[in-house]
View 1: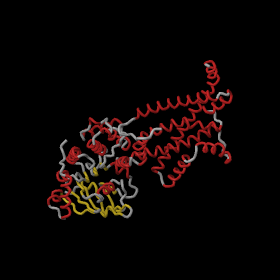
View 2: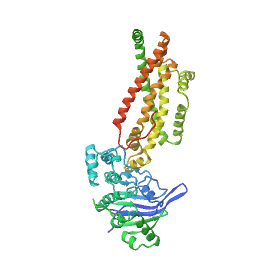
View 3: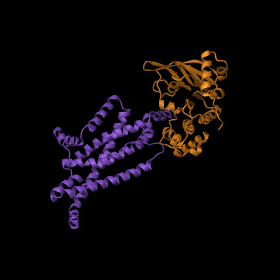
View 4: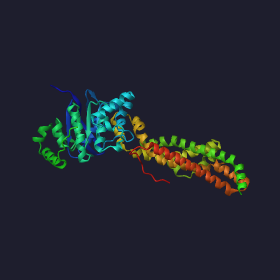
Length: 256
Length: 227
């Protein structure tokens, strides 16, 4: 059975000044698939995510979101971004808004949803990340893990076709990583399509369907998670996976 | 002594009230114009194109780099040479407004930059346009952050307005000059006027402080030097 592609990237390239960050990347993320991107820092993983939701303009190459080519001229970028949820490494919650308002502002101002309806939806999304009791708290009153869960709820509220995670646990204290991974695992189980840049090997092994190993702006190897962990084709993949598991340990996603 | 004091107050009160009224009017107009000029200027400085930004920097440097008095004289005495004659009060208002706008532009710019680029990214990521992001995410935070600096500017403006007596605007200082000349009692008059300025500054500080406390949001504080 052919599962339809949600994200399709074709020969993507991006340079900053003289430096080529992404050197021709092709990648497909299918419906309900969880794809983890790993690789050394400075490899272009974050840039790739930012290109996919058009926060950064690629130099060349094409990207499709479902059937729509979003790199085509005259694409309404704001509309595209409504359909792609993005979670950042450093949360980027709106500091002047409460947790609930962080989730509802997109509904109010972007989707023009009715205030009460948006509130209902916002509370439900906070419930989903187990933070309904923090609805009235400001970001400064939340822990890092709570902030990231609010950020996930904010992205989910717009019912995106796919969620992009850019190292969602890298800025967290070790004891807070589990709660965020737990939410992500729950999302995966619910069938959310996800593209995740992370160093969390426990998450990659247990939750992801596919692992993509990027280095120096290209995809060196990709494959089903099991195969990548236990029988990678390239020695370099094995070496990196070994090193990263040693460095970061294996935080298992906790249940919430 | 007490008799002479009460006589003095009786004679001067109407003028001093009139002067205070003009001083307050000028202060408010200057601050209002200052926001009107300063906020767009700050936005252009941060988000604008190259040439628009240069233009704004030119305006800011011009008004921050020259004495207020020189600006006032150029606008009141200089512009008529170019065929533009302004009334005293209008010249005073526009000068103070332009001057305050230049300073406010810098306060607002600092605040906008303190909000950080991550907020813009996150706003765009939920599908907001640049303008929506500025309006709903950047500006509300920037205005909160700018409030303490803006309060300083507001309090200072009460005192800066005093220069307008030099183009014969009858503000508090202008009235003081007239009264001192009429009754030959400069010490009493200027002391009284000084007290009135202190009172105005005190009241303004209290009001702005109350607003700052009311608007305080957890996590949104910008440390500034108070003066």
